[in-house]
Image (cartoon, rainbow over all chains, first blue to last red; front, side, top):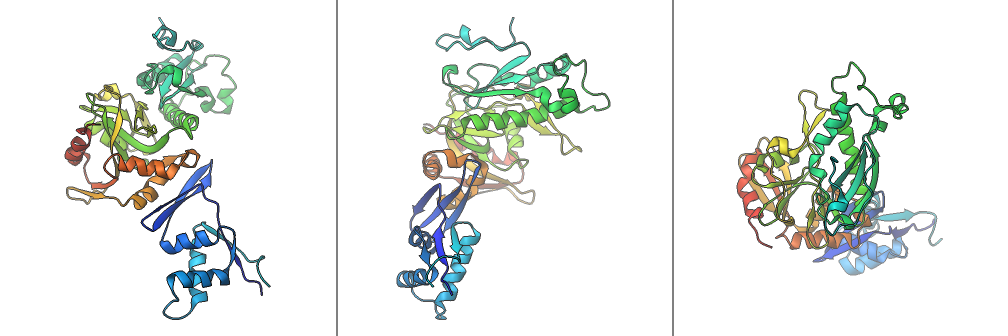
Amino acid sequence: MRDPVVRAVEAVDELVIDGEGVVLLGDASGGRVVRLSALGLAVRSLTAGGMPLGALGVRLAAEFGVPEDGDLDGAVRTVVDDLAAQGVVEVDPGEGLA
Amino acid sequence: MPTVPSPSAQKGETALPAPADGVVRLHALGARLSLDLGGLPDEVTRAFRRAWQHCLDPRAGGVDPADEVDAGAFVVGERLGERLGERLGERLEALPAGDDDATARLLMRTTQGVTKALIAAQAGRVLMLHAGALSDPATGASVVYVAPGGTGKTTLSRTFGDRLAYLTDETVAVTADGWILPYRKPLSIRRDPHRGLKDEVPAGELGLRGPGARPWVAGVVVIRRDPEMHGVAVEPMDVLDAIVTLAPETSSLPLLARPLARLVDLGESTGGFRLVRYAEAVDLEPLISDITGRTR
């Protein structure tokens, strides 16, 4: 089973203030701003060039710690799904490690 | 005597070709637009010239005509529909019979079209907010009130426009150094009970003041009218929350250079964005006076 690859969607502009931020997505036809927590910013930063979900979880755990219930994979998946729903990352199930 | 002042008669301006017969040149939002009234009945043409009278002065758009952006032409007759549009080569004697609101509807659609064309012409050049604005005629200190359509901008403009200069009830264009480019369009006043139809009324006919000193942004508030409110609630907005709130009320934001920083700069240079909840526009008098009383 392949590990999905997470990739930050290219933004028009980003702004970080006191560890939190906003990202402006869109093109000439219009824009949309999404607010990001420190965790969301970290996911975008780590996945700028694409990163398998498992590797992303390891990097996030190193920075933010492991969830209290120990379900790192589930927590990372939830975060990534939320960011994907807001259009700030893409998840490609067809790439990654076998 | 020409209805539209000749730009070439103004000292220091670049000579522009005179508009053709039936074409009115509008100046707004730092741009010029040719409003083509060709083929329309005289009565309708007069209604258009009356409605747009505050955009006829070559400097009404806030910049020297030589620095205006060209927004092209807007052909009003094309909004009459395909069948009548084909007859634009000949002058119509009257709009279609049986529709008492035909002129009002044409004016309303034209205002929307003109706004769209002006915004398109300025895309990527200036920060544009879906907002109204009033200005102290002596100092130019201006309050900008941001809100979605139909939620209080026009009412606010009318309420305080007898002592403050009316700049717009629709789109506020802000230059990189904080000046406002006025868009003194006719105010779009909803006609009850026909909630879909608005009357386009020039500011002067509503007793609103004309501009004085060059307007600059003294304060930006996001307004939320709540009939259940008692008094006024003013809350400073976290800058990131403000950007999330303001972004949907901008036009062509992605085309600006450093667009998010532009919003931050606007907030920081005006004392921060504030969210204002109120029931009646008149209750905002102290807030409006505070902002328009500032000095640059």
